[in-house]
Length: 324
Ligand SMILES: [Zn+2]
Image 1: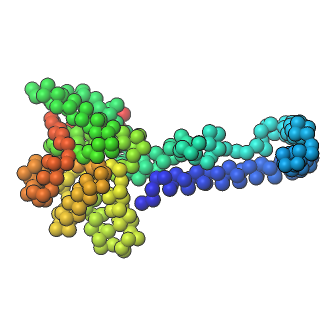
Image 2 (image 1 turned 90 degrees about the vertical axis):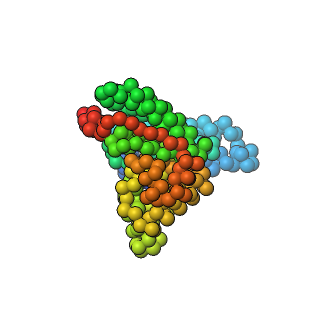
Image 3 (image 1 turned 90 degrees about the horizontal axis):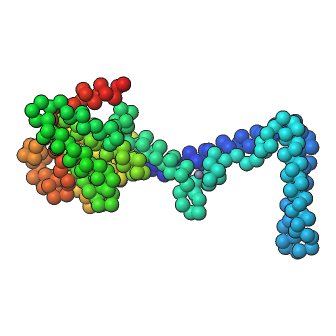
């Protein structure tokens, strides 16, 4: 998968080319309508050379040439306006006037380049449109308020879940943290994962979300596919490289010796390279141990923050709310 930076740079290059093409088109339109315009431009060129002469030989007055250039520029603007064009119609076109479409200001990334990068990392995240809408701002405690007798406890726990998830999303890369979200089906694990993903994207971090089921299919495809060229192989590489990997619903995938080994390798490699991972599961620790290995669960216990969601199934409530 091509990096968001490479994609953003290419998009910026396209923007520059489009603007240059539009500039050229406008220039021909002007020259066709105002024959005198080219003459003024040629005069301006000559004056540019004269200006250079002033600097090199000091044989002419700098001020004279400058005022001559100013007059010619004025003449250009007048010609344009007199012929129904706007005064700046012949000017250079920039989509971003801050960096003039170079993407950099004083060696630092311009806000336009940052926004393009954000757009591309968002597109690489594999989050559905619905999930892109799930944010901490929408982490409304009233979602968990209809739990009957246990409501107080659920609200208390879910507030802790929300706070822990937010702090994780804000700091995972600085602290090399990982997160294991445990809890029954429908208690908000995917919702919490989406909030984390969106916050990380907002911070300019690359994110890749995938269900365990689909992720292991991709691993199988990459293994049996057309080598390094296949799309699956590309995604598998991204799974190792991305700033934040989110594996949803661990335990629902089809396990083979190969996928079990692949999962352990991802978890281990990402810990070693200081990259963060979020895993959610319906399974309890004992079930995880039985399904994968003791080795794996000891990684979780040692290297992952663990949060536990609680309560009734809120999927329908979230869906109804966000459909509106
Ligand atoms: Zn810019």
